[in-house]
Image 1 (cartoon, one colour):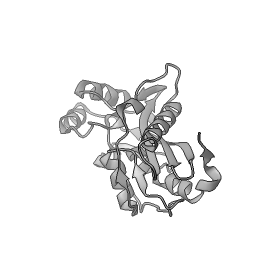
Image 2 (cartoon, one colour; image 1 turned 120 degrees about the horizontal axis):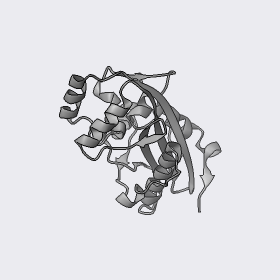
Image 3 (cartoon, rainbow, N blue to C red; image 1 turned 45 degrees about the vertical axis):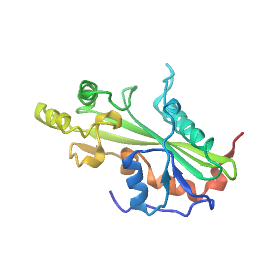
Image 4 (cartoon, helix red, strand yellow; image 1 turned 180 degrees about the vertical axis):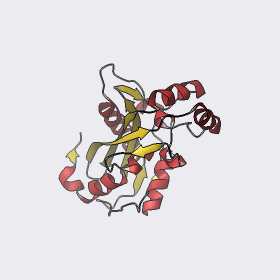
Length: 207
């Protein structure tokens, strides 16, 4: 990935990443942000409405994760995110076992698909937040049986939406239309810096 953008935080509050995702933490660290992590409860990330689209899902999850952390802290600028892949209307979250991972990869092989990340930035001090969704279009080269077997055996798919990691150095993944590479990893750093810079104009009051 190219040099990651960084903006000044919109408040004087400490930044709290509502996630224990090492990939999101690595992106924030690489951009130069100081922060601490606090994992949201499992209840904040459960349930898919039958007619919910991928963008609606990640926006809801990001908001619920942030709200959970807000309820447990007296101060802080909370950053929460949720990422899924979507192919022909099917939402692909994190695989629960190797068979599930294989099914996802076979579905994506040789096809274009989308990666959506919902992000929520919530200031506890000002009681204002922003929720947005960023989409990146990808193309996955056709996977041979050997490529598929080797990747499944590597276990690099574990804990990753769509059962793949763009950051794993897979040359069979191509970002299309100048999309955000960091969004595919799990946090759209370009849009995040814009949200921080324009937070007062974008944010809405929360109850």
